Image 1: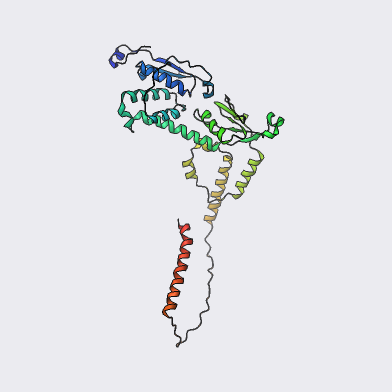
Image 2: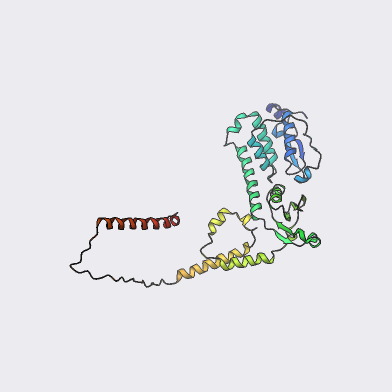
Length: 334
C-alpha cells in the first residue's frame, strides 16, 4: 500500500482513503497492528478510513487476524500513558474514536513535544472519551442489581444455588471488561448480565458471551426487594432528601435505572407537603421550665473562708470538668 505524505502532492493528487476493517468495536489488538503497519508505510491519518465489525471481545480471540493493514510491523515507542488511554477510549461508542487515536499516534511519533502539551485538543478529546468510559464502568459496577432465578440447572442440581440475573443499559462497549470484574467478585455463584449489545454469563468456572437481550428477559423484582422498599418507605425522613445534590452527583440517565426509583417522587412530594403544612401553622410559645435552687440565706456575719489548698483543689476540679466536656463536644463540632 503506497502513500503520498507530502501535503502539496496530496492536494494535487488526492487519494481515496485506505479502508481498515477491524473485527469488532473493541478490537484494540487489531487497531495496534493496523496502526503500526500504517505508520511504517507513512500513511497519513487523513488517508485512512476505519471500520469496525460486530464481533465481541471474546469472539475476537478466536478469529484469525484479518486486516488489510495488519502485518509484522515493528513496535512503535509511545508514552505508557497513551497505551492506557487507548485501552479505555477504544471502548467508547463514538464512531470516530479510531481516527482520533491514530491521529494522536501519528502526532506522537512526528511531534515529540505533544506529550508535554496538556491543552492539545486531540489529547483532551481522547481523555474525555476515556473518562466517560471509566464513569460508565463505575456506574455499571455500582448499580447492577442481581435477582435470583430458579433455572433448569438449579432444579437438577440445587446444591449449586440459583442463577442471579441482572439487566443494565451501558452507553459504551464495556460488558466484557466489567464481566471480568464480576467474575472475580462473584466467583462462587452463577450469574448472568444482560445488556442490549452483549450478554455475559458465569457458570462458576468460565465466562460465556452471547448476543444482546431485551429488558423483558430480565426477572421482575422479587419479594425480598419489595420488602426492602416497603421498609425504606416506612423509615423515610422528610429532612433527608437533598434533591439538588442528588441530581448533581447522579445524572438522570443513571438515576432512572436504580431499583425503586419510581417511589422516590411520591415520597419527596409528600415530604414537601408535610413541611409546607408545618411552616404554615402559627408558631406556639413553649413554656419554659424554671429550676429553683434552694440557697441558704446569707447572714451578715457569714464569711466564706477558703484556704490556699482548698482554692487550688477547687480550681483543679473545675479544669478537669471543663476538659471532660471539651472531649465530648469536640467530635460534635468536627
